[in-house]
Image 1 (cartoon, rainbow, N blue to C red):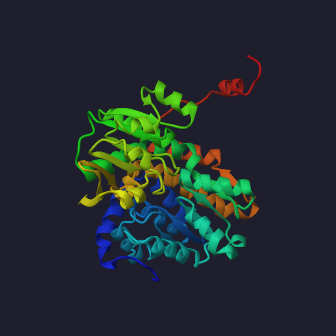
Image 2: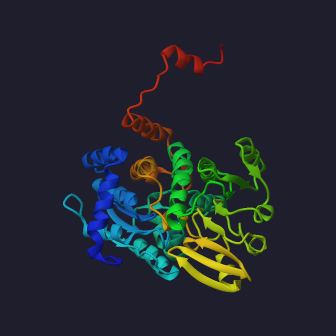
Image 3: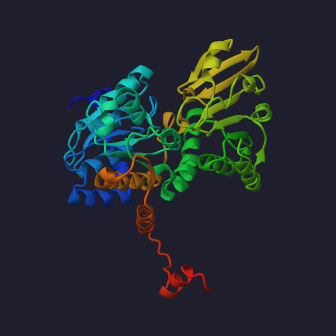
Length: 420
């Protein structure tokens, strides 16, 4: 297959990883069986740009089982796992090889080339994480606008970009806002991010969290999850926010709230989860303690100004894999994890399989919706249909062995009536 990967001989390790997550993703297993029977993507090409690790690879195989021709790349230079990419190119006894363009540690230029390679296959449906495929269509492949049925966006950053396109009247085709589906953001953004961020931090630094002051920048669903886990690990937690409502929420959840300028001088561990740029910059570095550790859990590497550190620090040193040290003055160092990229994926394996089982179930069913309805939809951002959200929730509860109550006809009628 036409592919750009690191080393095809790595495929056995990647295959083992995919098999492990398959055993822990019952929702996708059920959808795979449905897709094998229905073939909703027969004759269609799906271009996918999502963090390329084992759970994403299994999603690719589920979509392939529905008849899709899968063209795959990663959505971050450091989150691609080369052995997983090799497994998708190699294929196994029950899945055919795929076109994969992804390298761990690729340059920005190579990353963009891989996005372009996916788009050069003229995909019918896009599955995006951060908006790079859609942006590639807008900037370099405008002829695809009339061809693509639509797509799905996985994360907050990408949804922000799509909303900006929609507001400007330039969104080229219908897109599904997977990120804001309840069975995605309530669990993936909160519990998935919370656990995977500290998994990445712990395996990289091998330092204790308890007793440290942890500064969490941003109190959206991801920030809530990070703050919750930091508190559970014994940290003193400070939240920084620009939204006054979220700031009050953080206070009532038991956290201190203050500006980053003030937090910079007291924090031991800084985690950015805002989705915006220039959250921690030169004006903050100058106030930080010796030994402060900085990392990012937002999609792009723009939240911590690592470029300024590299240009202005008196000394730079690789302390250990994924830890860069910067000496700011005579005896004061700060440390950046994973180059300021997504710490949970660049320094770890990302969200737990059971969490991504829900998120990718939403993705798979939303992609089927686009395959079936794309030509009838307007060029705008669509919420995931409620019945898809509820289907995933019901199936997740069944997989957990949990039953819930149902409304009686009288209760259902009461809730629809204006009379008491």
